[in-house]
Image 1 (cartoon, one colour):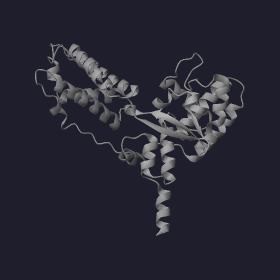
Image 2: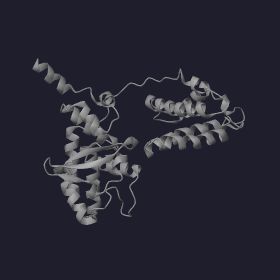
Image 3: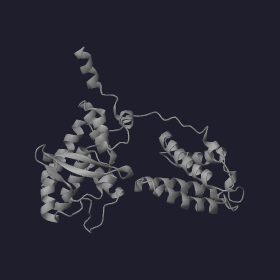
Image 4: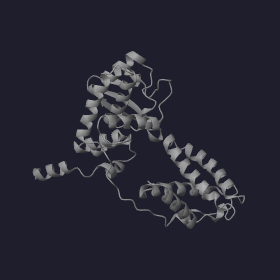
Amino acid sequence: MTLGSGNIVVDLKKWLVLYLQEVSNKNLSPRTLEIYKGILEGFIEYSRGYQDEAGIEDINRLFLNGYLADKENNSKNFSASSKKLYVTVLKTFFSFLTENNSNNHDFEKIFKKMKIKVEQKEKPSLSEDEITKILNFFEKEKKSSINRLIKYRNVLLCKVLLYGGLRVSELLTFRICDFKFDPENNVYGMLVTGKGAKQRFAYVPAEMIAEELEVLREGKGEAWGICTTRNGTVINRSNLWTIISGMFRRAGVDQRGLHILRHTFARRLVNNNVNLKTISELLGHADVSITAKFYAKSNEGAKRAAVRSV
């Protein structure tokens, strides 16, 4: 297909539609697609300021660096890792253009020197004291008769993320009947569909969620979705963030967000010296190196134990 018509905004929008069709066939999560689309739509808006001066074929490293500098100047939280994500998305988009334009225009060369080093930081996680505070808050919360089923639902969602290590996107479609009790091991097993439509089993200790499941089963039935609102719709990610963060705050825990529960799950397994391969499989990572990259460090207790064993 011809690269451009002379209007940089019109051309980028045309290519964006085709690109999103391409990546949507790669089984990326809805959240990932949303991020890709947002970054590229932002780039198109930035390009609007140059549509009288440049065409799509004029996009070069200076142009891309200008976009990144604009984001950095206008965003309070545009970190090095954010910048790296933007470069990655732009690179895949312009690689798609390079492969599919009939003008043989090569955009890939402009990314050869656009390497951003990001220091890997240990993923934030809840401390054992914070977990205790949250669990104590849950018990008080469940004693209230006001909005009882909603409160039990919120507690269940938080516990499944904390004790099962699921991603939020993996949790959204779960129903009560999807929790299968394994009496031999005293766990609830869940068949999870993760990134790339890959399936795995996740497990939660039965004693942690049995009461919540029983109450919700009696009140809502086996087919009820655990991420369902009062109106019967599925809770979106932002609302779930607000729900979980609100529970942290009321429990006296100065933490926010959803993914911290998954990080806590992984960190506790690492601290208990669970094999990294097992942790990787429970998290649904594509490769154990991803698990090692984020979680296999700073286990000071294990280091001290190793020294004492010599």
